[in-house]
Each structure stands twice: as structure tokens, then as C-alpha cells.
Length: 162
Ligand SMILES: [Zn+2]
Image (cartoon, rainbow, N blue to C red; front, side):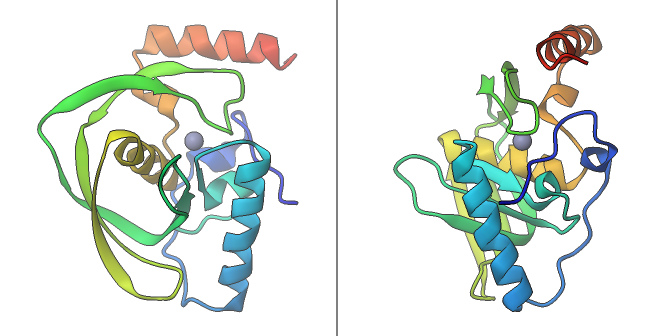
């Protein structure tokens, strides 16, 4: 089972590189990412969270199917935004209200190597934005005010005995 990297590990701040051609190695990585995500009871996971700096993330939101996004780009975001609570397998024990676009249009390659485009709102749209941030080295707490972020990091360190 792949281990999930947690906040404090510098790899989470790095930009992920374009994923190479889809092959058996990548297929296996994606399978292992789903295993790690389900083990953590998560609904989304980016490759960097298992220590692989590829632009790949997966989602499985309640009521939706398993989705794989390879080399994704958000090509449109709604002007409307909303605020909702988020957590992250890499920041265990911490939740915070984060402002995101209500809807996004994303283009990516699926795990059968085909390009697709998807309009997503609600929880899926939120998870997609959260996971895409990971590919650019951004954690959800980075979207908070400095003051709020510092408070949550203190709480996180206390909970994790650092
Ligand atoms: Zn996350």
C-alpha cells in the first residue's frame, strides 16, 4: 500500500510534471492510488500525495463513478463561487471552509488514454479544484488568510505531536 505524504513534507509544495505516455506502469500507479484513497476514506487523491510528481489525480465522490484525470487543465470557471468545508488526506484532522468556483470545465486524459472534457459543479467540482491545486503545489490551507492558516497549522502540529 502506498503511503500518503502529509503536510510538512516539502514535496507537497512542488509542481507536478506532465505525465508521460499512458502505460502499464501508470495504470498500476492509478490502481495503487485508488487503494490508498479508499484506505484513507478520501474522495480525491493527487499523485503527489503518494510521492509521485505527475499531473494525475483521481476522484470518487459519493453517487459518482471512479474518475481519473491525467494532465488536466481547468479551461473555464464560473464567476459564481461558494464556500464549503474541505479536508485533505495529506492534512489529517484539519477541516476548513474554502471558497471555490461553483462550476468548472476541465479537460484531461482518462485512464484509457482518451481526451475528455467535463463540466463539474457541487462536490465533484470542488474536489477537482482541490486536486488540481495539489498538482501546482497548493494545499487547501494555503487558500486561507495567513492568520487562519497559522492557527490551523498550530492545531495540526499539536495533533500530530510535532
Ligand atoms: Zn488534498
